[in-house]
Amino acid sequence: MNPLAQQLNETLERETPHVYAMLSSLGKSIYFPKVGILSQSAEAKAKAKKFNATIGIAIENGQPMHLKVIQDTLSAYDPKDIYEYAPPAGKPELRSAWRAKMIKENPSVEGKGFGTPIVTNALTHGLSIVSDLFADVGDAVIIPNKNWENYELTFGVRRGAEIVEYELYNSDNQFNAAGLRDALFAQKDKGKAIVILNFPNNPTGYTPGPAEGDAIVAAIRDAAEAGINVVAVADDAYFGLFFEDSLHESLFGKLAGLHERVLAVKVDGATKEEYVWGFRVGFITYASQSEAALAALEQKTTGIIRSTISSGPHPSQTFVLRALQAPEFEEQKAEKYAIMKRRANRVKELLDSGRYGDVWDYYQFNSGYFMCLKLTKVSAEAVRQRLLSEYGVGTIALGDTDLRVAFSCIEEGDLEELFDTIYKAVTDLLNA
Image 1 (cartoon, rainbow, N blue to C red):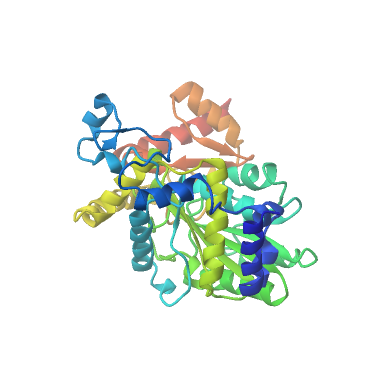
Image 2 (cartoon, one colour):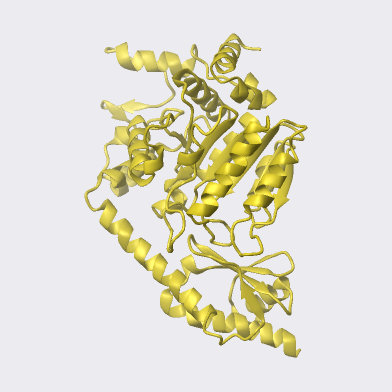
């Protein structure tokens, strides 16, 4: 094993032995080279005042070389903020700005030990880093039965982990904390579990209430006290889009410092929070009371980034940073939130109107981009196909009964027609 990796491992084993035990074989082997092209280039950038012939970019007239046809569309930005490589951990100013935003929006993190967010190539990349660092073949990854299909690829296919599902909703149509607890305790012989908490949930658009959140935290704490090491991942892809009286903070704050056997990880990003899906700017943040452990986890994370994508795109990091610093940012974001909330409320109003009879139920939703119908008389796939072929309407079929509808991409005034059309497709099939 490389001496740098060994040094990081020794730090983690000394500072947070249970976190060290959570690492995958790759997680234990990975490191960020301290003596290499990037470190030597950084040293040259600080000291080479005459000529800097270290890193693979081109310079012209004292600026990064660029094409006018590109710069003409980006003239508001200094070439050094878009053409040069960003550091593997991300643009430092952006990392600091995102940390400040996280504290403002999640008061529960105050006084907790957590690191500076590391920039990822959006949310999927952040989850992939978690998978690489902590998931080995046979490790349990615990998710609800209503989940984003990419978890299977990221943790199951890529790393060979075992996907363990529990029912998302209990008999009271609330979050099934008891099911999560049972799934955790089923891993006692393994002594380790990775839990992914995705709120607002994709595909259902559900976020637990405060009491449900406390029950989730209690289940994880109980598992830790029973000797299970838990990597608790808050997948906050749709953070902030809370439309009703649910949790309005990430569970990361309550999970941080919960127990020595719990490693809280927050994966979030500008992707959906700031409506910049194509920018691919996300973040991964670790919680620990040990600064040395946080530094070691950051080094291992940047090692994963360096060995896969090298670094994230600099232009989009600059664009997001500029937005966060803009005086109009909060006002403009509030305007978009209001639009999304009105759409969600209109969907619920339509579904509760009684106009669609008994052909479907719907899963409780209160946040995010989506909601799910539970079809009671016909298959979701048959409805999806009918909507496409006869009406030119796209939806997502999940299993036999569930039809996911993204109200986020439908204008408020078109929602009635959308659900009337879905109802028509169902009745077409019933009458066929």
